[in-house]
Length: 212
Image (tube, rainbow, N blue to C red; front, side, top):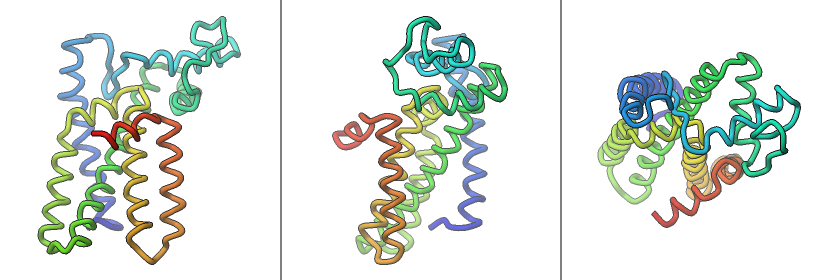
C-alpha cells in the first residue's frame, strides 16, 4: 500500500499532524488535570521519575540511584537510556523530555503506517478486492492518527508507547515471515528484534494485546 517515497511522504505528514495534536490538544487537556506535568510535546507523570532520575544521578554522583545515595534496581535501566543519551548532550530536563517524546511520537507514526500496510495485506490475502484493502488501510491510518490515547502514550516519558510501537512492528514482520516466500529470513530476523525490544521495554504489552 505505502512504499518508498510515498511511505516517507505520508510519514512526514502524519508526524506533523500528530505533533500538532499532541501540543495543541493532548497537552492542554493533560494540564487541566496536572498543570506542571507536561511540556510542549512531553508528559511527565506516574512512574516517569523512576526511569529518568537514576540516569541523572549517574552523571551527578556516579551511581545508578533514584535518590542519589542507594543503588536502584526497581526499574529496567535501558528504558531510560534514550533520555540519558539526549540528556548527556543537552543537560536540560525539559529539552531532553521534548526530544524523547518527539522520537517516541515518530516511532508511533512509523508503527501506524506499518499496521496500515498490514491491514491492506491481510485484506488481499483473505480474498478482498484492492479497493476494500485500500479503504481498510486508510481508515486505520485516520483512526490511529486521531487516537488521543496513542498520542498520550507516545508523548509520555514511560516505556508504554515505545513498547506498543515495537509490538506493532513485530506483528507486521512476523506476518510477512508467515505469508511470503521472499526475504523470509529478513522478516524473521526483524520480527525477532522487535519482539525482543517489546519484551525489554514493556513485557506486559504482549499479554495485554493478546487478551484485549
